[in-house]
Image (spheres, rainbow, N blue to C red):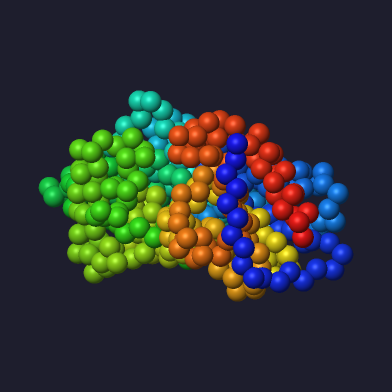
Length: 393
């Protein structure tokens, strides 16, 4: 059984001889990639007798899947080599390189993603060093700009591991060199970039974030996200204290109040750490990807946009991908249909997201795990309902 919640709004669809359908989903974390979801929706729609013009564009919001979503936007070189994961085991990772513009597109989740978490993972020792290795490789190979997508991290080290890989060094109050691990953040009293690969180079770093969380505190990196990465309540307190110490160091060194920078808490504080120490700028991951894929013009041409994400709830309004899609559908008075693993919202959320129809794969909260295990099967069944709704036009 599937939940089908339908919300009708008085929008006129202007059609010629066919429906123009744009399929633009995010991934369903823990089950299917955006690419797989888009393919299933497109394949099932193509089986109908409806006159459809189907365009599919898998999307991402700055987390895992970001590289896959932009891979076909231009002629990229795909660079693959071994780096360290958060546990300092060597793994294969890739990044994309745009030779025409000397720009590297790097996904933090490749080296430092939550997929590397094992039952014995220790977040207090989890490092983003491997992501730094990817950035260093790109810079040494001539990158003038590095775009780093930082969603889906397994770490909470304020990006200090990245900075270490780039050549930064960290010291305690006695001037002794200190390993930049989460367990040591509270003891970091000084940092230098004398040996940094960024020194005397003109490389610009852009951080693409998928959340707006501050650096520390109740809504910060540790308190909100560290428990999802295996941190105990006691460890969350220590991690938050460590982030506060790094924030003090940033203020004392650069007179920057990192807590006031939106997205500084993204990926365990990577956003804030690179903003302060590496001069990076922070942007919305979904908006950056929208620009690269020219999503606005494609929405403008479509009759119906089918999008979605694993869970639609109040957090979706926090600059998530579906929220940014909804702003564009509202701008051009287009119909937005959303497919999700589970819908947990109210009328306010429905209206603010400008959604006309919602198709939820899970019946209720107790059904979520079952839906995750059977996402593909349920999505195909859901497509029968979507086709039925299209036939109603």
